[in-house]
Length: 575
Image (tube, rainbow, N blue to C red; front, side):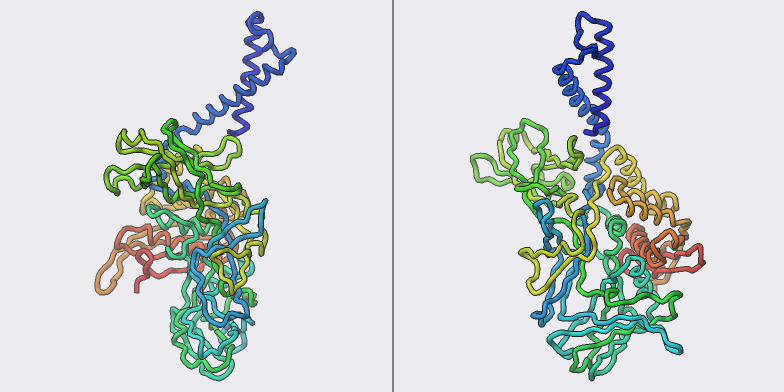
């Protein structure tokens, strides 16, 4: 309950009490307020607390009805946004071969208020005994501008190293890294691999550089299967745009004559020199980095179902510092038997066998702490089931709430049962702030905005901005990031969609040509604008109708420069 409701109710009670006492002095002399009675004051405060709770419930009743619909259609929107960061792995000298660190590997933090925050990695990652020893931008008269990297293997010769791909994270200041992201995605005309000792250089084919972070396997947020993936990409960019600052160098298997040495160069030749020389240093190209998010599996305290209440609060078991992100599984054990009963989520109702027991969830803020609390309600196929008392086992995915916000650089570095022993690791970005979903009265308008959206409506400037603003949660504590995201949205100054046709494999295909205008001075840098538009390109593609392609063109209104993206159907680019 907010203090506003309590204070208003208490003030109203005191004023009414004085008026009533003046009108009926014989009935209520102690309510006059002239000589306050402590017992009367306590009674008024208790009544104000109860009526404040009731008033808040009445204010929120309509949005609470909508929560059930949101859980069915847009379940991702009611989930909190956990803290996220970037984790860098460094192989120890004892590592002499390539190891795979799977997505979902857990990394712990130093204790915060007695609790170690757990982060899980989001990318599958190959770690080699390799390091970047040098990086520079080279521009000499009469030669193409180049970005030169020097790398060194440890404990093996290049001829024994069989890696086919390398993934680089573009580190350093975000604005500079975003500009470098643009150069690598749009300006590289030639890629050369050169051994320092022996061997022969190799030129990689066009298309050997590829962006990272857009596929479902590279998701930061755990989205439900019935949620639209385009919203995930938008949300991830607005939460932590650094998640997309990766570049894959592919086709390295074509480099056959690698020589017997352990060092080699990678040369990225640029089609034209950039307007300003980029600041390149070894930290600009980091190896073995992955996004990580504060999510982990946990069990709830057992729930005794006695059918005397409509819903049951779900509490993470064991210790404080845990908050519920979502419920993964609900199992009931009927008292006096060994029978286990699986409950089906409400959103899957109708897709399962008839006669299944169902659980549904509702979220609301604690009247005391204002943190989100999750409540479970049950539905049975027959009255006979209701008569049985049972114990519920609830499997959860949890977060550490706002605790990670107290962590600094390098604090997420503690090993867990799943972390690799031959590597060191640490966070290279401060964890982002946890964000609560907007479950109050604004959820009505957000729900209506989602329902009303279709491809044609999104294709207007006003509706596109409104959609983006829906995913900038106003209740977040990181006011700087919220302001930066709002400014990015305001940087979109025009949007037009026109029908288009294209011949694909001998078949005429219909699609849409999307022309957008934007101002780079509303973004962290021109590279940040390019990354933002790349996210929108993906969103438009997966939002379009089936078997229909999209192609995005963006005009920077201050310079007149035009950026274009290849035509695509969903996640697939057209040849």
